[in-house]
Every structure is written in structure tokens, then in C-alpha cells.
Image 1 (tube, helix red, strand yellow):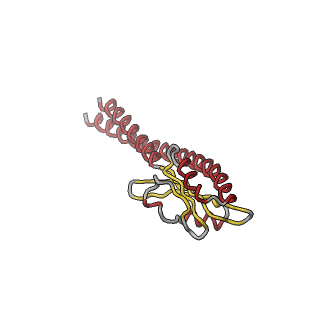
Image 2 (spheres, helix red, strand yellow; image 1 turned 45 degrees about the vertical axis):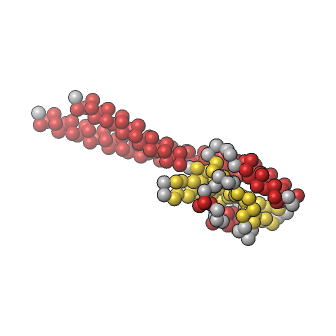
Image 3 (tube, rainbow, N blue to C red; image 1 turned 135 degrees about the vertical axis):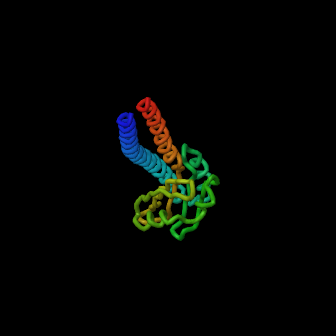
Length: 179
């Protein structure tokens, strides 16, 4: 009886270790894949919107920026869009953006200084967002920045789901091993 108990405990420990290691690797890969996909989608959207914003800047119809931002602001996982001037003044912003994004983001400043796109993830409490900032270049000069804010909370939810699924599989394996 003691040998059987030791064998069962050893099998349970080995199965738990294997599941933990494989789940850790699986979650890491899934997070990387989902973040890369979100970065790609955000970049495509921001690039397409930047061209429309450049046209508005050239024509001088700055008031139409709000209409443009509102029209683009209802995409999948997109929380909202904001457009800023080089002196950090907000020209237009989606009404759906939380209060957190009503201030000039540091990421936009970096994008304007580097004259190239910049992106990153922002976590605050239980919320997670992806911000993608692109400079608005006109005739070789930076005229402002466009910032697209996406909800990245589903990435964490997907990773948590993987943990739950693998934990249930482990429980089923433990039941089979113990009987």
C-alpha cells in the first residue's frame, strides 16, 4: 500500500510539473502571438488614418478632424483615437476614450522626436491597453501625432483561459492516476 501511495504521489507531482511547464510556455507563446497581431492591426489602422489626417492638415480644415476621429473610432477592440499638435495640444479625440487618455501620452512625444511610429502596452489596475503613436509629417516637418488606443484586455483573458483549461486537464489526469 505504501509503494502504491508513493507511486501515485510521484505521478501526480510529475504530471503537475509537466502541465505547469507546458502551460507556462503555451501562455507565453500565445501572449506573444496575440500582442504581435494587435501591434500589426494597430499599425495598419494608424497608417491608414494618418494619411487622411495629413489631407485634413494640408487643407487647413482642422475642425473636420473630430468627425474623422469619430468615424474611425468604432473599430473592433479600438478604444479610441487622439490627435495632438507638436505643442501637446489635443486637436481631436474619440469620445469613447477613458479619462486616463485625455492627457498627452509620452509615447506620442517619443514618436514625434524619433519621427517614426512608437507603440507600447499600458496597464492600470485591471485594464490593459495598447497604444500606437505615429508622427504626422508634413513637408519634412512634424506637425503632430496620432495615437490609436486599443483594448488589450482580451489578451490577458485568453491567457487566463489557457491556464484554466490546462488546470482542468490536470485534474482529470489526477483523477485517472489516483484510481
